Amino acid sequence: MAVTGVVQDGKVLETASESSVKKAAAKNGMDKDAFLQLLVAQMKYQDPLEPTSNTEYISQYATFSQVEQMQNMAATMELTRASSMVGKLVAVETTDSSGNARQIQGTVEYVTYENGKAFVSVGNALYSVDDVIAVIDQTYQTAYDMAVAFCAAMDKLPRVSSLTPDDKEAVETLQKAFNSMTTYQQSFISDDYIKALQEYVARMAELVGNTSDGDGSDNEEGGSTEGSGTEGGGEGSGSEGGSTDAGAAQIV
Image 1: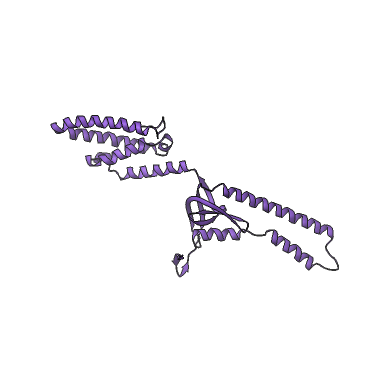
Image 2: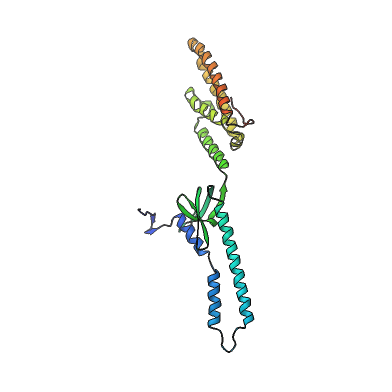
């Protein structure tokens, strides 16, 4: 498998995953093995004329046991915390080699435990569980994404005063999209955008009505079209009723 990396100023930049793993390794600090090595070194290099008393060794050993138990408990809690994230959407924030903060979002695929640290796999890359800054509810994320897409589409429309019949499909698409949302999803859209959509729908109804009234034959067809449109709206609201909340707002 080929390995690629970003090169800047003659140096290969670390990925967000590499930075996260390296930072986690640097946080290990003094562990139980280091504590035991210090204890052995103390026994080895003690003054033979004034050796350390047995009571002091027992006290230090008890301290060592407490440190080991606390580290094991912390490791278990960290692994439990990481395992609870499997299958959930998370946000990971880490710092690259240039000192720039980077944020990655994705679903946790699995959890691994190495050198006393828990790591989560997001997008086939490992990140320290300490770098997980948020666990995001999927329903929330879906509603947020829908609101962002809706507002972006609204921003692409011309001003209400500049609408033409050619914009009918775009306005109707936004109207149907809003009506298909649940009350919770609609709550992510600001009142200004909802009011603007109502104005677009009302203005488009005026434009289409004026166009139909301009031709007698079209007017007759327009009457039947308007009737079928109303029927279609009824069918639309009926079919969408299963996916929307009872309290969801409808723009007609």
